[in-house]
Image (cartoon, rainbow, N blue to C red; front, side):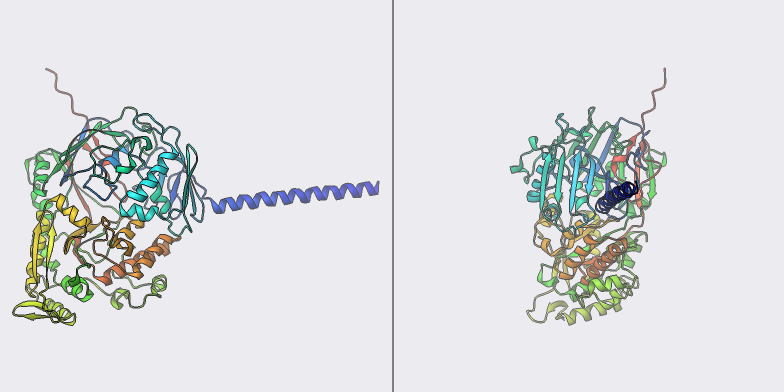
Length: 618
């Protein structure tokens, strides 16, 4: 009995040990899965976790009870010769990607680093961000009734990677493998995972229907709209003048949490106007419904009209937490006379912001001194911390000492319009760069060529500013021609970098990422159609862009953004102009905006039209 008891005890102990081992293995596997897979599968977040849980009812700023029906008309300046804004050729509005097509993920205007599953009912992304997978919602349908499949996603991916704009070509080119193991599942291998925003870029692709898209002609201009899975179809268009969208009665995601309270109008029409004055006059006449006002003079004086006084047009001032970006006069450094940073700095000194703001803009602008103004990403007035110093260690001298110390500010004048001291400092810099005054003309002391260039503009407000700047430069013997050209010619010249100087605005979100490579990456300096208009080619900037994309923690991300800011400021690639701290919006009184505004940006998807009051009974 004793031996039997001993054997029984030993057997029980062995069994318990085996169970403990199994429990440990299960726990280890569970822990490994938790470490490799985020605890959520309905969204992708760059840092932290999504604010909204799986099963949320609607976006916080969307109003599910918003009125449905009616027509909303949007006005735009310029024209169009294509409906596809995803390729290099042509001038196209955002109507089709915004309203006709959908993407795997939908970005929340409340969260800078999060996108939620739309066409994708499930998202899988490992902790290292080297493997990404999407499960396509089984309900998703294109407007012809065919299901959205993994093959459509792969088709779109390959097409944008080879024939899309430079942004998509460079970003999607980092994917090492893309497969569709089943009709509703698509998988991507993302290399070493260093581009942490790449999953969001893939998720944001507007998905094309493979069976209805000609890949061979995709890169050409076309008025044929893409077949999409979105809430609208293109019902009518007049080339270059108007696009009419009609809401689908069979939209597959009518009651999806991401679309509930959005896409409220039965019809959306885009009307195009040749110049800014015609665009504004049309708004005052009630020909379109919503206007974001960029011109302080108009906002201060142009709305004293009967439609505003009697309440047919309402005005609002909105504030968003997103950085304000950079508006500036851009030097095309591909031009030899802009190759010297001292020349660029000197010319930037001659922009008299104080005079311009007071006399042209009612003093409402703030001076731009950062590419991420009004945010924690801005380096203006902030000394570089240890993280930034580490990023710059391999590039000594890439950032000026005063910009590194946070003591630099854009050149200020006495506001007289003829600041002699400022002109003297600018001329000293030009002398050091090898230029001197000869018979009232600033010339190179080596070749004798005059310092002269052209500013290309596309509207009257730009022309007015450029003429003022040209007058300031004339005091230094610099001849500047201002050329106003039509919209189509302007975009063609920009696409080919065929200009000396332009006025440009680089808007920026609270989550700058891959788009910054398109703007500042060396590889895009010679790539036609890119947004690297300044022609920036700097190894320090390239390295910092990679650090921005690889940042795992918020602190590292902020450090990389500030370092990029310092490098761009040190290069004097633009003459910094100004920005508005708030957004001015005017709209017809029947247009309904959500009571709770988004935190970072306002898009037209939230708009609704109040039903017309019934006619009084006789």
